[in-house]
Length: 610
Image (cartoon, rainbow, N blue to C red; front, side):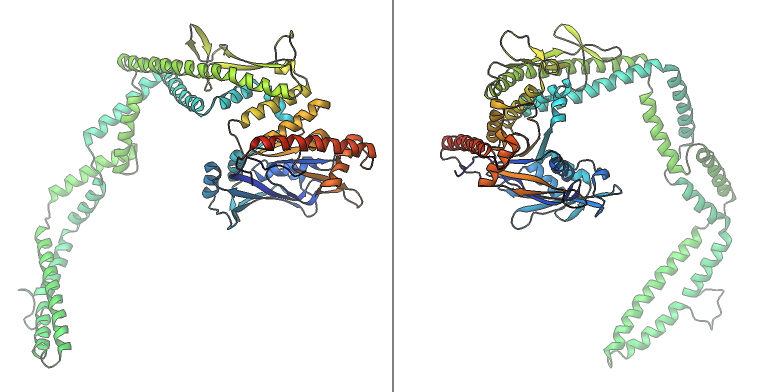
């Protein structure tokens, strides 16, 4: 039966292809991917985990040289992204930051190589980039869920983070505001405590700074003064030689009483040359042009001569001034020996000292002002904490109800999830605030602890997930949470690595149905051992192990039609050619096809996925 058109990713980012070379047991495999639900099956040890590891590498995960095949000694993972319509601005922004542009067909190639020595390189659109850039793209592109994620879900911090994401962007903005105010409050607390606890050391430091500032203020150095005085001292020390040079130059340019009458000066010679050329300018205008240039030279010589004369007149052999310059330079050198290499550095030191003195102020007035600021920030932090708590409590009821509804569809019809938002207890030496009439602990994420509780059937007590959920139940709870998150956005590609372990029977069918539903809004890739889940796939890939050679290798192939039924029969009974197994597999495929067809009919005229 042909799969119905899906209403999900009409635009966005889709991972169309993944190629893995030289990673673990995979010598060279290409995985054709696409929109919808793609399942990856195969015998235990065939290399399905390497596919997930390859995805992790492609999107910036840690490079593990131990997984690189000895021959060729380098692992390569490449992925082709298709950017349809208006992809996530976050993903496109990261691509632009990398300096890459999609190809004409709207695709973009990502790449990662790892050598056996542990060296790693990353590429986006053919450009070399840091691995962190791939991780940044992956953060907005892909969410990977494995069995370790189920364990992570048991941690209170993860449960609180899940609730905050579900609460929506406005709540997350409120959390950012709270974290900023919390940081400011803690900084004010620490500053006040430091000033009170280290008053003696601060007084000593402040006294030394004041002594230095007083000394610098008395001298009053000016920017560049040391260089100016050095140049002035040099002129005063050589005033006679400078005067002689200036007079000789002036005489050569303009003549003078000391020059021999027969020796013409430069200005006179230029005048003679100019007049001679000007006299023949009517005959050849080239000479007229040269005469004009000589006139310009004559004007320049006269200007230089005038400046030389003024310089000579300004020279003053003043022993008193020279002594004053020597004394001033000595005073400035005393400052530069103590505070900096030159006068400009001394002035900069004084500026820093004034700033530091303001920070060291431990007067009663300064401490009172700091205390008032601390109390103001504490009050604002408490008010924001109350708003965060209110947002979490409002979201907790909606979140619990939505997850409970999903659990009913996952063969847990009588189970209920509750989410408790509890005050964070005060720890010894940790910050605390007064919230709603009680003193509670506080951190950058608020004053609350979040605890998800599962009541598996009526009459059973609601227990925290870490105590009240079996492995199979925890798998279904995590999937239910992921389905709920899918309704409020999230990354376009979701990867599930054997999260259905410990589940079978009707629950396995429902997990397949839910993953298929999730694939209407996301690209979903699932590594599974359950035929009930694999039956719902839009694309079915099998990882096959080849032990015929000296080295075990694995490859990936697409299965369709009868080959797909044979693979499901293998998963059911371990016998791909069993008539009974194939009949059961075909029944599973029919159930899945009817479910997808009925969902497609409900979609009506909604925009198709592709």
